[in-house]
Length: 507
Image 1 (cartoon, one colour):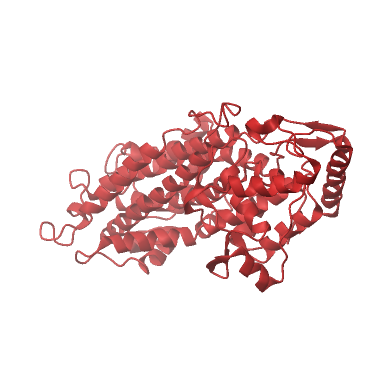
Image 2: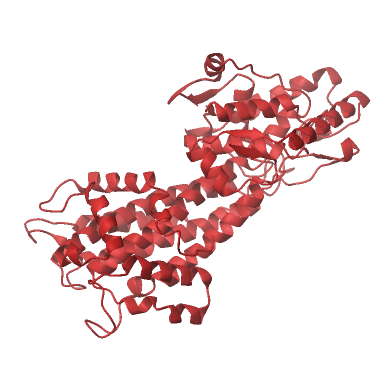
């Protein structure tokens, strides 16, 4: 069980909660802060002080004063009017992460919610009732208003949820679990939707999937090294120490470890003096992606423990400050950075695929075909990989440099961070399929070379992958192989990572 404090949530804990469904509990100290913050709001309301979001309108309506009898209706109207997300829903794991991150932010005690709201968020997590949240419609500043409004709808018994592996109404799920929806009071609606939890939740899931893919890419690249009788000298520690990047050194060390004992790799001058860049520069290119992933991890962990709503309440309500912590620029830039880093893993992988299938670049059967000419073998798999890599180039265009003013120019600069996070997720899915294609080709190549000559580590990977993708003995519908292997890589998102945990890696 993970205890939430509002200040100490790690990506490892988020992984356990979101993927392994570990339960959460709220720390006593955090709940005291929530209670104190709520008392401050109630005092503001009783004293009829004018404070943004408590007894005023929102955005351009911030100068409109709301009568005391209407402050609760104000919050309900806010949620309903802002729940205008469109498109396909976020994956359920992202919705779960969104619940977790919104709860953790509120536990910091700067938002003015009642304890019952925090308790309900925790109950939704522990009972696996996850809001159905449309992906499109957030500008990534003023918070993820549209997505988080769909989350907030569930708390008031409206909207739809994922529950027991199906989609149903929030009302039905609450009835099944004996839960009661809440009636929003002053400040609570705004506290729920002012924040970056949609882009951050998507970002955390992206980081988990991308970092696992980065490890898997090294295993698959090692298979390719054996299939092409690559030169191991390029991974010599002296080369990488001479440059000094820790991530580059770590990739080279893992590659040496994975290939240790292989009789298929070669030394300088045995077959050729040096390899093409897509083999020789694996530590440099993959290592650069790891540098970006490390940067992204740092920003996500900060944001996962950040107060990102507005206004924030300090000093027992004596100080209430309107600011801009809801602005998603830090995560927007991080997601754009992640897009580039992930896309490069596919870009260099596709070049290795080309070297595996092109008869002008190796001594293997053309396109790894069992009957070249009569059967096309892996020819069109390379086409597919090239298409996915090209699509990634478009998706990698930065979202964070764009801005369209909103709310009658009151909100005149926005981050588009949720778009960046969504595009990063699309890129990661494409990368996984490109790596699946490289894996299929590399499996065939090492089979031609002799699997008895593989390293013990790559042989283990080979045998597990071969259970899903049989040898190419004749042409077949390779789309099915690609999707099956990609699904296996996604399902085993921590398995091959664990096998290299004894090697020090900076994350």
